[in-house]
Image (cartoon, rainbow, N blue to C red; front, side):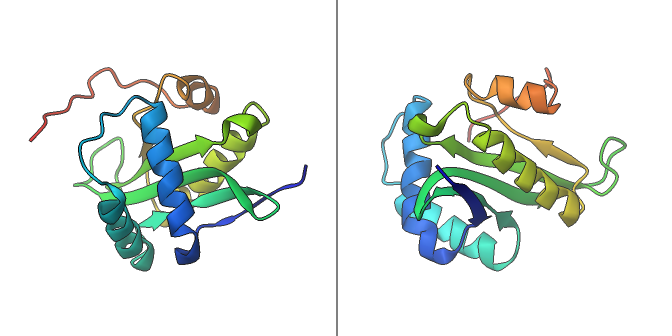
Length: 150
């Protein structure tokens, strides 16, 4: 097995979007809409303006792992004087390929992208399965994270 890594391109979007939906299903999402058009719109716009980047893991020409980093900017604060933050998403490895370091390699590549973009912090809402990976990498829990649904 020869795993290679490269950045996501527009030509990969059909597969990338399907893997994102598979990930959401695996995490127990309740589906009540067709999310494909909204995901395609998001990725096309944010890839074009440089505020979304993804690295892929491939076995031959088959995508077997995905990652995603969205760049957002908030008013600067002491913990993040640039105000730029990376929001990690789309971390998914095909079940057959898990526990081989692929997710860590993908994580490392998108964290580097966030650092290069000027982000002072990276955040994720982790799945139960992902918590070990992120904790081992150095992420820490922020117990004050709250969300208000509109």
